[in-house]
Image 1 (cartoon, rainbow, N blue to C red):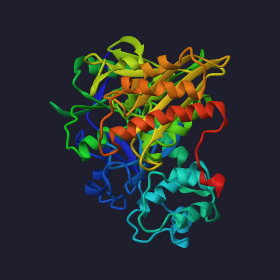
Image 2: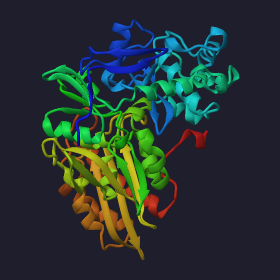
Image 3: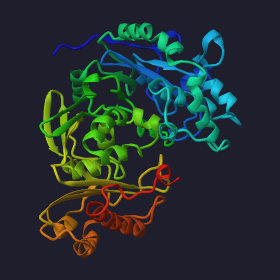
Image 4: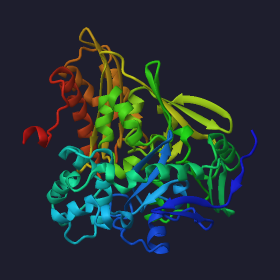
Amino acid sequence: MSAPAVRNHIRFLLNGEEVTLAEVRPDETLLDYLRLRRRLVGTKEGCAEGDCGACTVLVGRLSGGELRYEGVNACIRFLGSVDGCHVVTVEHLRGEGGGLHPVQQAMVDFHGSQCGFCTPGFVMSLYALWMRNPRPSVQAIEKALQGNLCRCTGYEPIVKAALAISDYGSLEADFLMRERAGVAAKLAALRDGARVGIGAGKDRLVIPASVDDLGAIMEAESGARIVAGSTDVGLWVTKFMRDITPAVFIGGLDELRGIETSGGKITIGAGVSYTEAFEALSGAVPALGRLIDRIGGDQVRNMGTIGGNIANGSPIGDTPPPLIALGATLTLRRGEARRTMPLEDFFIDYGKQAREPGEFVEAVDVPLPAQGAHFAAYKITKRRDEDITAALGAFHVTVEGGTVTSARIAYGGMAATPKRASAVEAALIGKAWTMDTVEAALPAYEADYKPISDMRASAEYRMLAAKNLLKRFYLETTGTKKPISVKRYEVA
């Protein structure tokens, strides 16, 4: 394979201008660039960890020839990752005749702002929602605003404003919709197939030209840090001041963003975001859709990737337990060589994975549950939305003739790695699927897990919750077909 051409700058569109930058630090955030270098201060810094949404901007990119805009957290999005993209800030919004944009006008008229600090982020999140759904339901609005926090309004005026946006203007007349073809053409022209290399020594960033190029880069320099969505790595910089250089940004590699369903399984590229995976996974395994809806807010789901959630090896990562329960396998790549392994074997110990130097996660294969099999995933957190997991249980059980014939149960937050409950599984298999069997299996949890106490939960709470989740799973598989949960839309 011949080496690609190399350029020493990134190129992107910022609002209405094309930007070329040769001076870009690997750890420079998009938020710092906008505020400090460009003085676009409508984008705010609130939490600097992707929780509050005050820094929300839109990032548009070409995917399959289509231009798609998504809200992202500029505070943890690195500047190097926007090569070939269109960044839109609140300053760029405008309505017909140069007045307020429909989203802004609705916020004004419905008193959706008090102190105003969070308002630009809400406006950008609502704009992203409006572009994909001009007449959203209250449920859709609340989902879109999971990643935006406001301490003043109580949200009700903001929700009312969101419901009324289309009364202030049509989507067809929106300035970004009218300019879409021109922006798409400009972004296509920026795609030159070159590798980007900026900086020298350790203080540099690299953007591979292709997955093959990524393989060559990592084979030559195995200590480089791969950055996909940066929803975790971004906090390493903003909160822990960690060195992430040299950084290799892979968000623009379309080859890693493929999703294919065939042969009873779904193959997901490592660069597929939660948002991109939602339709395929929720359609085939509804419990996975409900879980994804509780991973961060919309901005985090737009940025975070399935492969990144696996590769960082966190014991509280949300996707590994259910994928392990389903029997998922990983494809790992080093240079041009590939190997596969069961996902459960990838996690060795806290912070340690079965990845050779220079090797990276390329894809994950997720088998679909067989007809009649029971599957569920439950996430335990202090608050329901946009919170980090205290414990997460995933259950995949087959019952034939009233007897458990197979069981795969995995938990996160209960050990140093995502881990199967092997002793619990053994206590269930071959037994009648009854509450007596479940109760008899509960002591086996003590053999499988030794949870710790931390700020999210005590060890005692985690153990009790884990056991209760097995009871809940039993009740759901033998009683109502709906998940046992309370939704205010159903009880109001």
